[in-house]
Image (tube, rainbow, N blue to C red):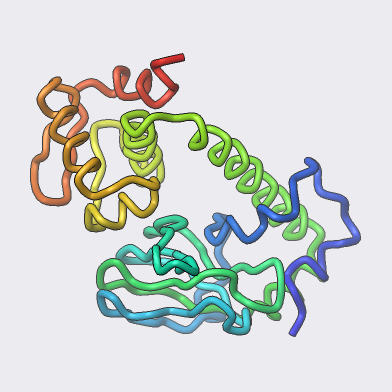
Length: 234
């Protein structure tokens, strides 16, 4: 099985990025392959897509629903790495094996593609190679910045950043749909469920957001949220 980077090593990456971050980017966006190449998959809520340590032979484009990538820590705790909605791609691995588990947060539909087929296309297409390199580098640089920021941000700042980041993924400015449970958000931000619930209540009480439904958050003051997410204390 060819690793993804094996077909791309003839071109140097435009930005130097720590290689250990490659496993921290299970979601990448780029122009999709023709639909005829892929196989449609349907997952039910909670169903596993792949496990950490499985061979990385395919990658997946989400067309409906939401998935999460996660890792179980040795002490039994869970770290949710990211959430992946329509238009996102996951499963592109920097090695022969997947570095994370992936499972459905909601019922989801995906298109599964052969990773070796992508490698072959990249070998034959310098434009696709450059596109993949640029996308991977931007995602890696973004993850590096996010890791540094999360190490300094307060719980309130983490939640504000998360809400805005999810809204950007969904192409929205007025609010965000959060199909995941509060426990998922807590495990993603390194907080407790109680802290997440308290922070949502505080943002609502301050008039910055409204909870239109169990999953829908409306932004009443996006600029104030952005100020909080940009580390208001600093």
